[in-house]
Image (cartoon, rainbow, N blue to C red; front, side, top):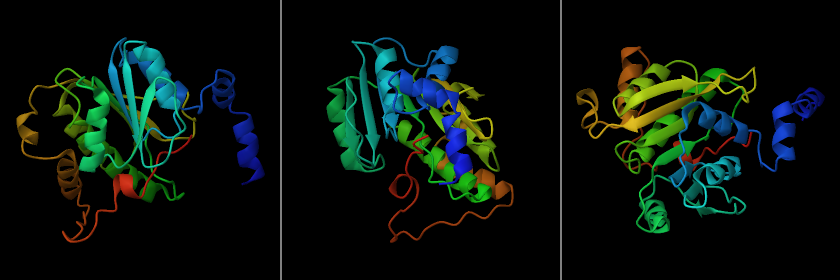
Length: 248
């Protein structure tokens, strides 16, 4: 750990504020600012947090949904209990995890899916951005298994090549899609958030029969970027299996 990194983080006002208010991470204020702008979570809502470790977004979701709300978090990493939330350790792409999520809902319907998940950064921007694009797209596909018509979805994205393909895929599924950069994000970060509201009862014609990942791959192909596909017999090792949420 470099001395500069340590000093920068000590000067990080949002980190200090988060700790003083009892939040586990500075990123809690990113969701709070998204909430202030878009009112994504309403009192009594059922919220699913994908990639919930270490729990900062879970804390905010519990506050915003209130006593009548229900908050469920899922992550490959063990997350310390958050009062008012159900935490599941598992892979969101596995049927067994989906079943456990549904059991925890006790017949209720999820209103909002949020995700602050990001890859373990390598320091090579092109690589990090490409992996993040794939990860965010997988989260969108996972969310579509839960978000009902009229529901909302929020995920982190990093600006770069191919991101417009993800935005278009989201617009094929939601009537209102906007990008938003909270002030709680570091000024040096290229991260922003895709805020999707009012899921359409039926995906638009361009997306019917396609996953968001297939749409993004098609978009990359039109840009002349080769997309490699794993052979069928190989175990999938993208997205949630090898990558975890940035604890920032």
